[in-house]
Length: 321
Picture 1 (cartoon, rainbow, N blue to C red):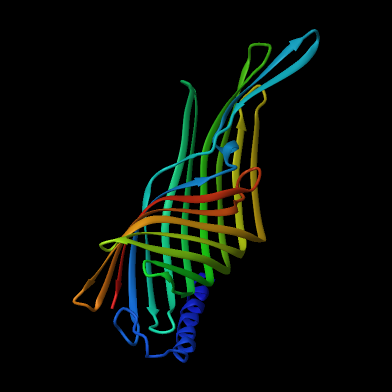
Picture 2 (picture 1 turned 30 degrees about the vertical axis):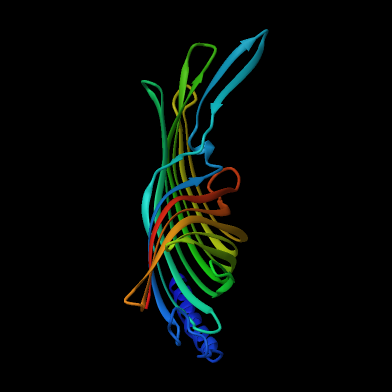
């Protein structure tokens, strides 16, 4: 399915270029080029993922059973916390064409990032809990933008397009809880989780980018975008729950779900850039910034729907020729 989405976006980019080319004029040059320019961009991503609503897959607990005045009292103490994300590297590449006049631009963007999070605790020499969470993001954006100069040093770039997203998540956990009875006997509940979810989505994207040229080629930039994805969730649970004597139970759980849903996502980017022209023909832009990407209701491996987000730094190099 994702390969079909990729072919669709390439076709979309080609058709849009031909449509906009028909409205192109030669009177006003863009970057001293009457015909416009091609652009290539490479981004290095240094992000940390975060997932919510996995607290029951990462917590620890103890169950105590007592008899008070002939009444059985069961006390459960539980500590729940989401896994802590780790920093990982990723990349993003983009190719586009900037028309001379009017100032239209088309661009195709590919993002690839693989991250992980974990949580471990040692309750006692015999009781430990460990959770590993892995997530991968593959995304293609095909956009059409218009560059509007509100002032000689301030340019806004409204854009719209189509976004295709694949997000894969894995949860592997070994959780141990102690069960204490009033008779001083003790049982141990050992849970092993092996859960995974794969999401494919496609939908419209709308956003606004702004560039502010401050001095000597240095400037600041920012982007705010929002998308709506319609997609499929393929969810698989494969869990084992073993309780030692005196309870002595083995519970194997296997569950598969296929869910369709509309979900929103937002992008927020802030940073600084430096621009220069080489040989009066090559437009070179280096960027350093911070990005936040939030996918709402994306995680369905916990007891409720949770969000998946990616935060961190970006280093970018954009070449126009």
